[in-house]
Image (cartoon, one colour):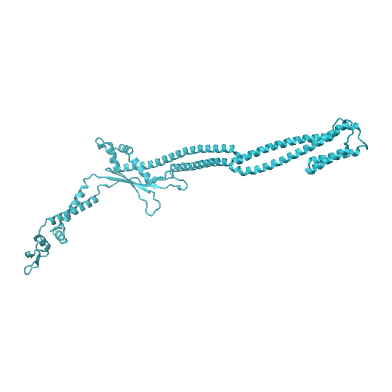
Length: 501
């Protein structure tokens, strides 16, 4: 008897002892029914194949792959493309699938039906490996015809292989073409920066920062040259003044002799004048100076003339010679030389001063030029680095594309073709039989519970107390007749109940 929906252990034992045959009957019956149903349910056959993802033959450290997308992500993208209507509808038309349903079922529903029969399952990476890339995937096709399932599975697998090759080649080509355009654009910008930098260098050649120390050194040398030229010009001007003074004195003497007057100047006086001139020259120049050597030669010639001349006074006729004496001619020649030297030194002084002014201007403009030069150099360096980086990436992309085209990159490989299923994948008899047995067991338990719930007889003191609402005072066990054993399992007892006080 069930009390408050609870079934005691003694009640369970009593029900099982009495109705034990119900459980085997329901289990065997349901299992038999489920097994029999497998002969009438339409059968489905599943063809499978394995596609492995092979690592590139060339190390990625040597040739970086163009496609950096993870294989599982690329597989998901390819799966969406292959299972689209544009790819599945040609398969339906190629193999003549669902011919009986085409008139009444829309093509979208047929494509959805074929899509539901295709199963793509990724392989999990092996435990303990550092490489978490997708090792491969299974392609399974479930269909009511085993040969057709095999053909569809082979077709889907081929589509995956072709799509993978096309995807890698398209991405490699697109990446290479894009980088080629970027390289051309970067090359154009680099040429522009190079032209600007070259024009700037040409315009401010002497004011560039790397020329500052050289300019300072050149300016020091120019100042020293200007000082030397100034000193040489001053000496030439002094020498010219001295030569003009000597020429003026000798012209007056020569004119006096030429006019018949008593000439105070004699050969001895000329020798004395030359000696005085030599003293002045020696005080300014060394003994190797041309003017010193020339004056010494004049003194030697004049001494020879004095030694060869007759004793006595010079005659007026000799002094009145129309041709100027050699000393005067030499002085005039020296004056002309002085004029030429002064003119040349003045020109050199002016030119050197101009060079110094230009150099000083360049040195003063160096800070401003340096700022512009740094900006141009920085822009040029950035453009150069960007161009070199793009060129390197373009070369790597081209190598990666060629690697894929030569079947040396990451590839899909099918170790075995799609199998021909010999036994149906649905319904599986052992699954149906096990499910039927489980359902029969559940049904038997439900029946036993219902039998226990419908049984209102009393079999224990607790049942008496619950039903009669009276306490049990005593119980009388079964007494078997003399010579007979009591019936085992009998629960008939005499129960005495007292009245409620």
